[in-house]
Length: 135
Image (cartoon, rainbow, N blue to C red; front, side):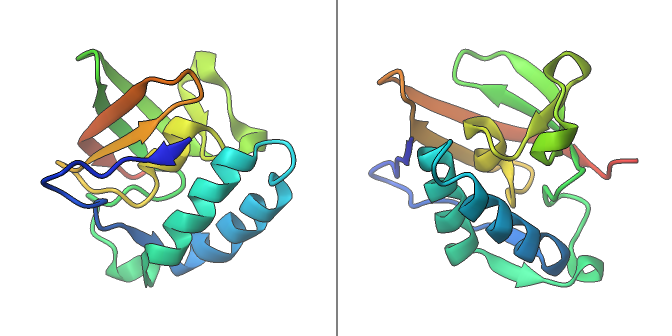
């Protein structure tokens, strides 16, 4: 999995909360052997993210626990909650940040899109349509 910047745009700016920063770094290092591509993306995202206090983050920024509505490259819309791996349950709409889609979502804001090359050799893209704070 690698990011793809289109000719007319760079990677989208992202914002990570201070509360999520350390835990996401720890997670990325913990999954380096089991999911090296996702770990690499998480580390890259953390390295380029703007880090802010939780109270400085608007409700439109995807943080851990956020409920996110997005559209994929096929035009399908999904609503998921972004969680840590131990809390993930696809059937319940809880997607792990340690998956390609979860790693792509963290730190994005409403209206931003993210493209990446998947393990299947195809380009993938998602666009954030809405964000709400989780319970």
